[in-house]
Length: 217
Image 1 (cartoon, rainbow, N blue to C red):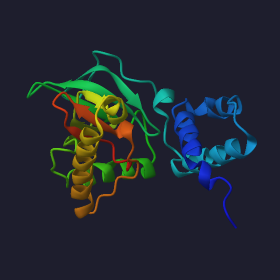
Image 2 (spheres, rainbow, N blue to C red):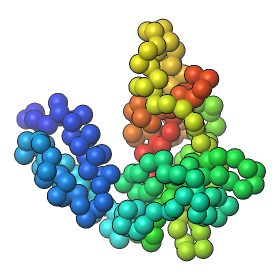
Image 3 (tube, one colour):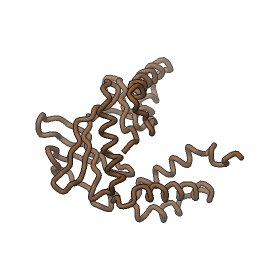
C-alpha cells in the first residue's frame, strides 16, 4: 500500500526541522498552531516523539541556557550564535592560540549517554576526512562542568542556494561537481552525510563549496 505522505516528504521534513528548532517544552503548542492538515501534523508529532525518546535524559540547548557573547569555554571566546539544532548550539568563536575563528558546537548542560555517544561518533567520523571541500575538525573537548563541545573550521560564506541564484548553468554544474567530489571522499572513508542540503553547503569568497554538518551528532 502506498504511503500517502511519501510524496510530501519535503514538507514533512521542513516542518520537523522547524519544530525541532523550538524550545522542547513549546514544540507541541507550536506545532498545533501551524496552518497544516492533520496528516502532516500527526506525522511530525510522531517524529518529534521518537526523537525525544531517543535522547531521553538530554537537555535542550535553549532549556539549559546559551553561552553569552564574550564568554569563554576552554581556549575559545564566544563571538556570536551561528545556529541551533536538535542537540546543540553552534557558535562563532575565537581560539586563543593559534588565534583564529572557529565554529564551536556545544551540547549544553548535562546530556544523556545516547546523545553523548552520538556526539563523540560525529567527531570520530569527521576526523577521518581530509578534503578542501569538507570543513575540518579542530578538536573535541569538554569544559570544567563536563559539557562536551566540537570545534570545527569556520567557513565564512553563503549557503549554496543563495550563492547559485545568479550563476549560469555551467557555474552551477561546476559547483555540483565539486560538492560531489567532497561527498565521494567521505563515502570512500565510510562516512555518509545524512542531511545533505543547500543550507549545509557554504560557498566561500573564492567560490569554493564546503560541506558542513554531517547530521551524525
